[in-house]
Amino acid sequence: MIIEREIYAKIKPVINSSEAIILTGMRRVGKTTLLKFIMGKIDSDNKIFLDLENPATRKILENENYDKILESFKLLGLNTEKQSYVFLDEIQFVKNSPSVVKYLMDNFKIKFFLSGSASFYLKNLFAESLAGRKYIFEMFPLSFSEFLKIKNVKTDIGSISEKISKASFDILDKYYDEYIHYGGFPGVVLKASDNEKKMMLDDVFSSYFQLEIEQLSDFRKTNIIRDLILLLMKRIGSRLDIQKLSKELGVSRETVYNYISFLENTYFIKLIRPFSRNLDNEIKSIPKFYLCDSGLANHFANVDSGALLENAVFSALRNKGKLNYYQKKNGQEIDFILDEKFAIEVKTVPYEQDMKRLSVISNSLKLDGYQIVSKKYSEMENITYGFLL
Image (cartoon, rainbow, N blue to C red):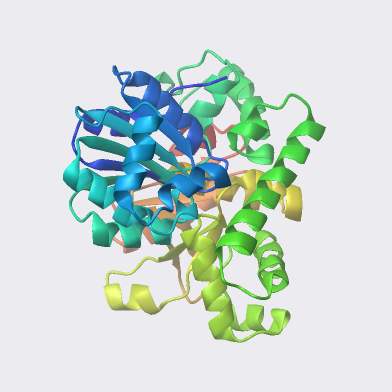
């Protein structure tokens, strides 16, 4: 089942602009499907789609004579004498694609739509060649609202009040349990049985490891980065202890830093830093990390329900603004601070003392407000649920 992804609302206003549109994100999040969805929305027959993961197709863009590339486009049916549209999927497989796109944009009326999974490559190389002439959109696994659409559940999450009834809560919580445990990769969500979902999660990880780490990276000891990934999966929501990881893996701290940077730049993990009014302190301090998808963590590491919930809440918040966490020396902490204004604590079962503690810390930090995200139904004030974020 194909649904209109929420990110399309951000892309739609610039579809007819002259700038290139770049979709980037983790493998298997639906970039190819979205490219084809956008292609179907363009009211023109003067358009082509090239999958660069296919070596035969890739050869078209690898020609050092860019005019020959244009000739290949013409042979595929593109009329370059008028406005035309070229969709290139998985462009990280062609290293010279930034210069190819720039040349063709400079000299012909071609609107490019590009996708790729390596954010460092896309953001940095295209930043140099297409400065001011591109829009970059980051894609992630399905939100819970998108998950419900694929499940064909006729519920408008946006219209539900945080003070929902216990009956309504029970209906949504059943679906949210599945979402937390199996995650939001479209290919996983579309599978009917638990065994099929687990097999698809295996496939998502294998695809990432083989194509991003073994094929595109220049790491020689891929077994080390594999072991690092498995260690991180068991510790989602924890602070990143580089020294400890270095000892456990038997490699230098610099190597661990390089691996962590790669994992973040290919969207497998995300680091969030401690909240501080001083930017220098924030940059120097130890980050926490979360996985791209709670389903992967649950499948490969069998982490506890609280950590899975926290990772799912992170997934819901990452598109809403800047995220930090807060931790005092005495151990008291706030799981998330959104845009340096709003405190969010995640609890499987919230208690009054949790709310009081959150209130005290939030007021001491002069934040605008606070809220607990609960897994269980609660009658307390300032409570919300993961499926409402």
